[in-house]
Image (cartoon, rainbow, N blue to C red; front, side, top):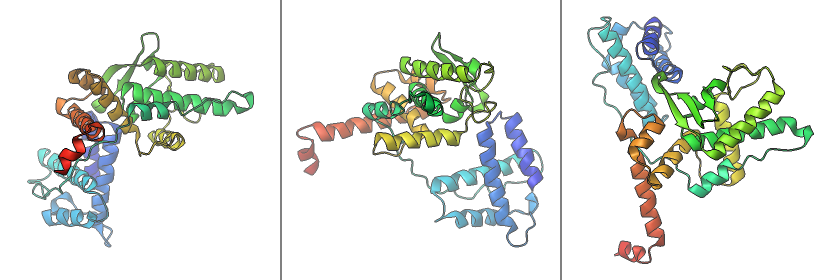
Length: 311
């Protein structure tokens, strides 16, 4: 079974041009499924031995322990895996084809107000004393990260993948590699460009041999980029420092970026291009966010809104 899983992952990587994160998620989901099937016997079954009832039992075992969205994703991974085996001629039919998917209620994404976003991205304050040289670098890096996420709406995986050669501060652009390894150019705002320039200058003073094709946000040793987990910790630190009464993730800044542009009257097709969405329907989620914000503001501010709702 494990050999077939690796063949499937290779297919995603090469033929589907999937991202590393996507492949890792599929591998985790499928290995968890196989672990469930192995039970106490400790022997993985052959794909031909898996029945629809096995998949149903696995899904049932997750209820109460995982969110419906997580369960739905794992089931989707299993269905895709067996579909691959059928297409390659390893199986006659997909045992997971008719297993029902749990209902997933899509909630609105967390979106910061303009004031909240401003408080967050301005929370890192670089130290100035020579004795705090490491703290200076950390603060400059964190400021650059937050400014870049909010200024461009790029995904956290895209941010950590940026190299020195991808950023052009003269033209105010950054080249990122999105889902499916598709490249796009996005624009950097003035504040973000200044933060990136300050951080880059600090790094070059510390490492004059900074590689042109090296990571713009280097981790320990400067050869590899920081991790997505590091970016998540950075955001959490400054959310607490700024006192924002919300729990945003790095992806929340992407939602915030799109919503603020939409509220400012930017055409949704342009926002779709900036975010790198293949389908306009994905971008249209933000119209719902914007409308809900508008209705909330109306309920709070209109003198007759409460009396109308109470009737």
